[in-house]
Image (tube, rainbow, N blue to C red):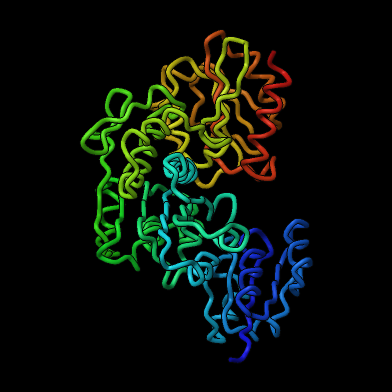
Length: 440
């Protein structure tokens, strides 16, 4: 059988892992990154003896491919993508490529949505692992799907966080259990600013599912229900209704309630995440007793409603991962006392009006952390106090000055981080470090 040529576009986590998986499976591999690449992943390629280029694309080499694996960060409108498609070469995502080499006996759980993907993925994995299941989590968080296959021993269950960008590049990828947590405006610049196109991208998670598979979806008559009608699936659909299934500090996903008051899953958004995770765990035969014990002991991921321990009589919360209005809505809704809110960054065309109902009478100070704060300042000009800053250290200093004993200090930006920080992780890390430094 002649050697097949694999080209990987992008030398990041998914690209380097897909390249190594391709090499393992007998492809000749070439990696091309328009940017400078990452030292960590370039070192992986060098160690594996995989050819690569950075700082641009050599089109003649790319057009030698039988298949191209594209980084999710590269839009379909990029000139290099148009050239490859015009040559008739298939372009797929890394999750599609990895799916072709996963053990067919393994169970795949795919979790997508605009908000809550990371927490739900990690919680689902924790529920399974705590019950003794041989499971691993990755995808759009931590290790890519390809890395899970080459750097981990074979698993019985793969729990994957999936972005719309990853799902755009699937052909045959099929999760046995899929979950669509919600659909709210996000990344619309990749979808012509059309919410329906973005929703259709999310619904691709169910396009290859079979009658024995399961698709869990949020009850949402405005966006998700029409998207389901446009994108039918053969899977068995379970609708998650938070108004029915979240009551009094507990979730009710079936025949018995599960108490959330004893653990760290605070707020309505985390109760919604837990509803999906518990449904998935039950489908995989985890007992109710094991589920409750795991819910009591689960620690949420950093940067998502992360409590920062202090002894100053106030509650400091790092919610840097809240990069859109919907995420910040749930964070503010969870505040149960007077609040200093730190927000701002790279505005993605946000409409801040929905936040009014969860700030009125609760937020007394807004600290705008960003280079361009005019829109945010104007939206909340009637608050008791609105101030500006340009660094995490300054934000923490101001919060320390204005927050009273018993107050909540919430970093929940509703914006991307790229104006002042490398990414939301850098923003959250700097915030946490400054709190520990400044606050006694």
